[in-house]
Image 1 (cartoon, rainbow, N blue to C red):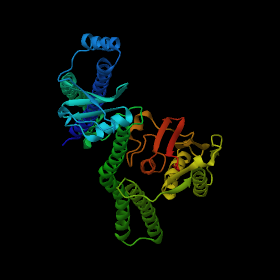
Image 2: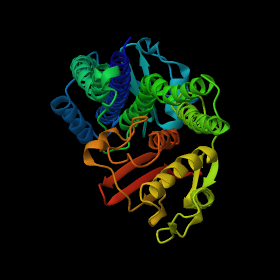
Image 3: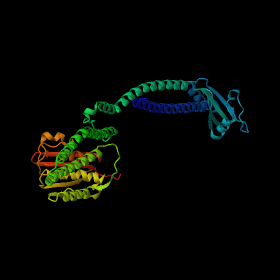
Image 4: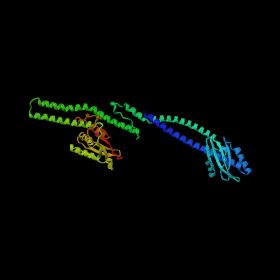
Amino acid sequence: MTIRNKILGLFIALTVSIILMMAAFAYFLINRQSFDDFYKRLEIRAYIAARARLTTDKDNSAAYAEIRNEHLERLPHEREYFIRLDTTGVAPLDAGLKPLQKNFFNRVKAEGKATYRYRDIFYEGVLFENEAGKYIVIVSASNVYGQQFMTELRRTLMICMAIAAVVVVTAGLFFSRYILRPVRKITSRVKDIRAHNLHLRLDTADSSDEMSELALTFNNMLDRLETAFETQNNFVSNASHELGTPLTAIIGEAELALNKQRPEEQYRQSLSVILKEAERLEHITKSLLSLAQTGFDGKKQHLDKIRTDELIFTVKETIDRINPENKVAIDYTMLPEEEDKLVILGNAQLLQLALSNIVQNACKYSDNRPASIALAATDKNNLIIIKDNGIGIPAQDMPFIYDPFYRASNTGGYKGYGIGLPLARNIIRLHGGNIIVNSWENQGTEIRISLPTYSRS
């Protein structure tokens, strides 16, 4: 059964159940009120009958008799009983009063009145006293009009419930379709996403409901899939090309050295070339392994609470050790007053690697001109901003800056392999963050890194 049918069935069941309970409750109250009203009518008739028949004042008696005959319509199967209590207070039973129990007469004597129902006949008894003695006056009748009213009420309620059921089913169909409309949109959009267009994303509304959360979850999953797919798709071809160059140089130099007997200086020169290419090969291999390990392979990373200010200090120390001539300065102007906002969840080694690569690029491509690292924090995110005054990235190269081994067209005079920025982006995404690169050729580059702030709730 589809979710839509489940929602429809549950909605109909709950609504119809509520309508049935309300109708049954209303029917019960009206039925009870109908009985009470009929008993009240019988009580009035009993008192009038007693006054008309048992009052010693003839004028009064005649007046009550006239009221009863002219203004009180006789009820179906209406009968009157006048029972005089003997000196012991015992009421002799009439043949028409056989259904009445002894308790009925006791209640009349004790409370002044009592009611009883036997099948369709209703009895109302009252205690009447005059100069001649005490009497129990009983009026009985059939509540035919009340039964007709209740029958009509039942028919009306059944018609209303049938109409309500049709309305509920119609509303339920619309309701279930309306509620699941965002799900259908998400399903339709996801069906359009294939390996060749993993860059597509689901539309997210500016709300915090479950559907928006589902769309954001899908988009985060697509981010990971796209990164993993791109890494896997480019890894083999790029690795074979990059690894082949130093290997070819090493093999060629070794063959040249072994081709014939040469002077010691030439051997030393060949070994120097081989060492240089081997170091290059080692650097490329380590970079490729790091890139592969951060490609969202599905393994859960161990995350600890980290202070981003301490992380930046560590990166600055690393850069000072690698490049003592750097002019990187830490900008403290945007630091928040609350230290708790500077805490994130992450892997310290991976984040240090990502930030170090970015800051090294800032130093390298600006020829050690001044660069800055600024840190800001909100309740939701930590923002790290790295600026330099270097050569920048040409506009035509911007779409490809995250492709492994891709280098901008103006970086020919700088040593590098085009792995640092893709590696940094993978690490930032691995931590649920985001990286934005703004660059202008010959003016410099600004990189904004956003990482989720640790929440204790």
